[in-house]
Length: 173
Image (cartoon, rainbow, N blue to C red; front, top):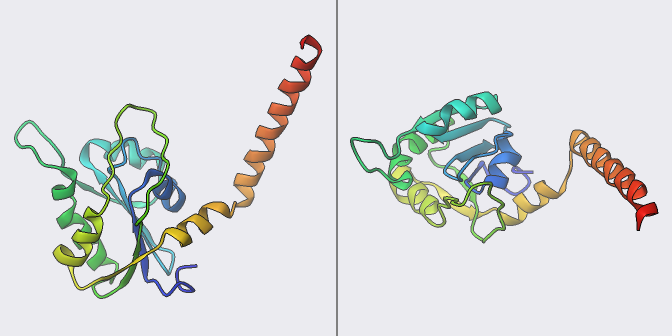
């Protein structure tokens, strides 16, 4: 799909996209996923979330610093160096990279959800290297709507459970 869209990689941070590309369900939205056209994936995870990410995903990971007792460091500042290094390691110094550019409805278990917004575009274009960024929203939406056999199986199980619950409740209505 990436090659067809003339992209070398996608860099995304919305939790639903990170989950789609890496299998990791980020807790607060600070994690960033890099997925290349040749199928390599990397997670950039805040240091305080790294242990959970290792337990939930087999994708190669790089952690980055966030707030600590010694310094206040925003995710936007903490991710710059590690993101640039990951892109260099993946050979994406002069790449065409798809990014999220539109809003998204995201569900969150907690009360707070971190969203990078335009900061990732700025980081990719100015702080890291000579990268061309392109909107990848339509491609990500298409990828999310295409279900794997595993996902289809889970959906069928959910439908059967709902059907059984409805049938059991119908006589009492």
